[in-house]
Image 1: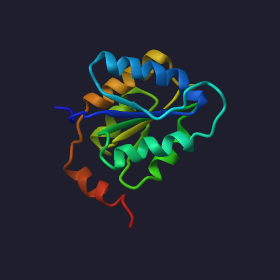
Image 2: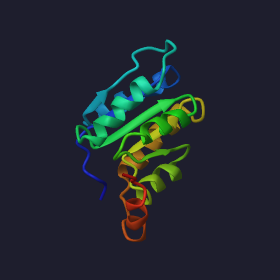
Image 3: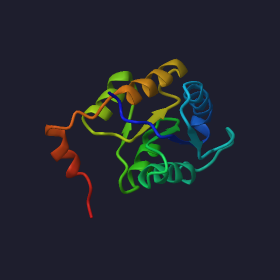
Image 4: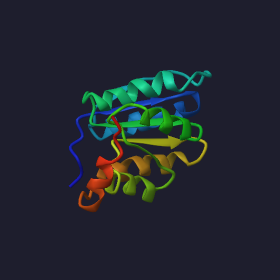
Length: 148
């Protein structure tokens, strides 16, 4: 049974804006609360300005899950992972989304709009939200990620 979803924080830069809007609509159509941390247009911007607040909302418990988007998703994943308590998985297919949750207990995922189709992006989100952390042998590994 998948984790309880209290709300999904979402943020992107200009290169992820189109998919951000599609994902928001998709999640809301499923009755999931979404908090949009921007950007609000396809105008060029700096992704940390939107990714850090998105990740912080997950880290502080305001939202249970987070999604960050950009052109490749790499910078966004790096920025999100700078926030203590966030485990952001870069996802480029359904399997990476499932494994991100099952093995890494990812509470945030990153998607690159220039890397996947819009349909696949929605499938990635759904697969990740439907997956569960397996615990067991993965729990010790997860505990070693956090540095003081």
